Every structure is written in C-alpha cells, then in structure tokens.
Image (cartoon, rainbow, N blue to C red):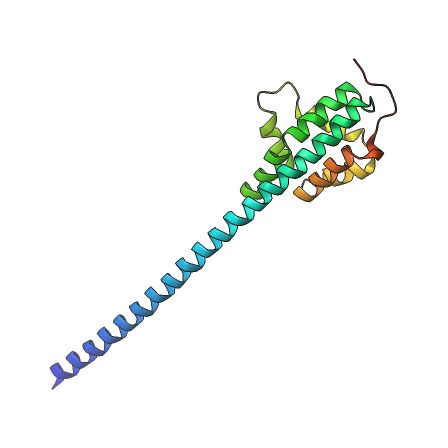
Amino acid sequence: MVALGVIGFLILLLVFIVTRNQNIQQEVKQTQHAHKTLQLQNKHSLSIVNTMSSHLQQSLQTKLNSLQSHGLIKQADFEIVHFILENFKYVILQCSQDGETVEIAIAKALKGNDLTIEDIRQFIAKQQSETRIPWCQNTVEGFVTACQNLTSDKAKVASPQET
C-alpha cells in the first residue's frame, strides 16, 4: 500500500513537473518573440535616426558653406565647425546606438585628426550661450541644438574671413 502511495505521489510530481515545464517553455517562446519584435523595432528606429541625421547634416553643412562663402565665419572657426558637422551623423549614431555621450563620440571622431577635444572645448567656450548651454548638456538633443545654433544667422562672426 505504501508502495502504491509513493508511486501515486511520484506520478503527481511528474505531472506537475511536466506541466510546469510546458508553462516555462511557453513563457520562453513569448519572451523570445517579444525580444525579436523589439530588435526589429530598434533596427527600424535606428534606420530612421540614420536617415534624419543624414538630411540634417546636409542641411547644416549647406548653411555652414553659405556662411563661409559670404565671409561671415573665420577660417579657423569654419574648420572646427566643419569637423563637427562632418561627424554629425557619426556622433548621433554613436549616442543613439551605443549609448555614448557626445564628448566621447567626438573624441572617437577626433582620432587621427589634427584637432583635439581641447580645441573644440575652447571654440565652444567662445560661443554664445544659445550654443554653449545645449552643447554642455552632452546629449544628442543638446548636440543637435548646438549645431543648429552654430550655423544660424545669430552665430555669424562679424569679422572678415581669415586666409
């Protein structure tokens, strides 16, 4: 009789374990599906960010070239802003995709370049508060705002272009 009780208990335990295992497998499948969906959404979002940053980069570079062609920006300032805008998309993608700060992304972009992060800091420190404050936030939003302000009409330098 005890043997039948033990066998019955083991069968109930086996049924419980099998049922529990099936529930866990179902939860794992749901989690995998949710993860795959999130990955696709993330990939799509990054694609949109990539496209928008490319268009914004082109627009800002056009404005900068216009400032230079009209002699409204010093050559040294132009070179720094040109570098920043040349790496605009890279910085945004580094921040969005890898979670970097703007300063770290700029430092990565500076590798192999004559400019230093200190040159950029000094340049930003000379700018109006509409540019300095967003830049100092060290976020994508602040970076975009600062870049827009660097190429706005308000940012024009009154002195003639250096040659």
